[in-house]
Length: 217
Image (tube, rainbow, N blue to C red):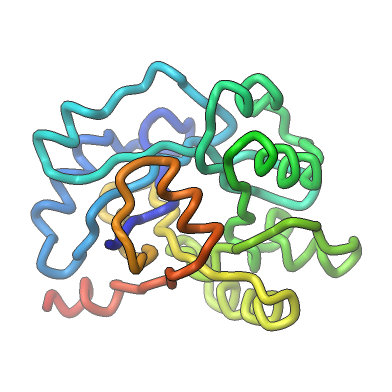
């Protein structure tokens, strides 16, 4: 099963992509973007009332929800967000304590994983150069569709040194970017709890569809 674990819809202030338009694009490009679903990781927010079941039924894609928060170690993706996690943290706070986020989200049933680690200022690589490593990190986003040349390559050093698992996401803010990088899982993912368990236990890897998309095959 292939999921794009990092997407932003028009609910994020810097994105202009409606969720349904993402699904229409993926339907059109299914031959080169074999993605089974997306995870909406809106910036600094969590809407407990968002419901995409009608769109799932209409288009045949899984739609899960997470969040992207900002910490003193850079940006971190949260999966398996529940009421307890939403009450524990102010997602709008741009200086969350990263160690608290990683530890507490895990304790409350979710998982917190750093995204675009190779990116200047907001990536884990830069923070690890001057700070101790975070405890409890299971995986990092090794392949980010929005990263510039050389940024994804920096991540491999962290993976080798700390034995992190790796995943991929498009980090799409535009419709045409959705699905270009994603994560392939060995087992089916049906809901947020499945995703958390899978990320914790392994059996997944980043996949890159950009060459296929450019070639149109």
